[in-house]
Length: 453
Image (tube, rainbow, N blue to C red; front, side, top):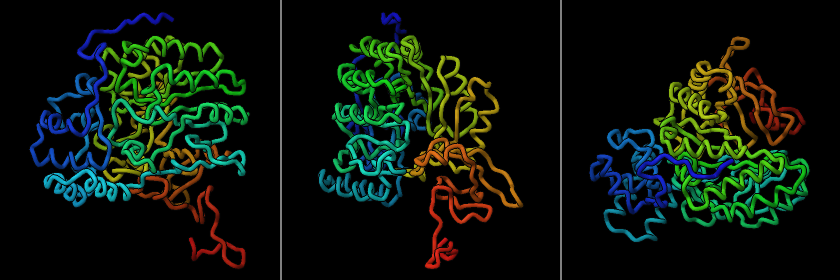
């Protein structure tokens, strides 16, 4: 490929990265038309959940005439009702009284503790291939074929999504962080596990790292014969496409991608796009073209988020746009059971209707997408539909991926519940005593004990 920049001019083209944080909230929320009391409430939420945005999102993505209802604004700015009112009021009162950082942090930590900082085994380092191995910091080997690696230098993002299930990584508490800079340890682990065919770099956002750093992680993996694919999970395309166009190391980064492909590995660029408006900028379209020209495959995914993309038309538009630009629609996720889940979550029944409504209006080329999918502790569970069996209304589900490979692809059923928003809200259906990944409760006589169901 040619790495000569071919970038449309815009207010953000070639601009140095500038981040906005909590200290800039008054200025930005005033621009959105919020009154003083509303600004204070938003600032209170931002002391509990992380806030970070950048000049590209501010200049290119947010429609300030539509704020605070603009979907991209809601995607990156805290909302006053994301947390219980009494918690927001308590921290707002501390801010008004001029409380010190220690007192504010203590109050914020008390609220965070109620928000399930580590959902779905996020911090579980269980290694399924060998029960006697010691956990390795920064590595998750949840599924047989795939190792997740959290590089130490990639544990932040160009901007934070308000719904992010990894929010706990960004709040400054060392006990909540999960990462490693031990490159040799990671490479040795992959080399010693021939069942591993894919390594996923995740975070945070690995593309926050410069090319010189990310190369040190990726290049040693290219020598491992049994490794078939390297994945990079990133929101950079949506939030800072200059990373691949006009940043000082943009060309070197694309050459690294070429090197991965030339080594015979698949480079899967797992791009997070949460709304079709994130594709409107010519900057991002240029970035997509340049990445694809390296031979990398861009796959797109996002969670279903109430108030931001909770309708079929939005997903239909998003998938069609991605397909038009040569990207592969991959996943619609269900919002995880962490942080302000009650604010963002969409019930599973409604999520299925939204998915199906969009899925049936796109061509077969876009039906590569899967969902709605829950990345829960036992694995990735897909809601396949709602039906009636033997007079009982049920959800039909299956494992796309599972800790126990024997569960993959096998359908199972749960009682229909219009309010259920997560796997653990569901109950077994059709007389089953437990779900496939659960052990049946057994009494002293060795038989299933119905009183413990």
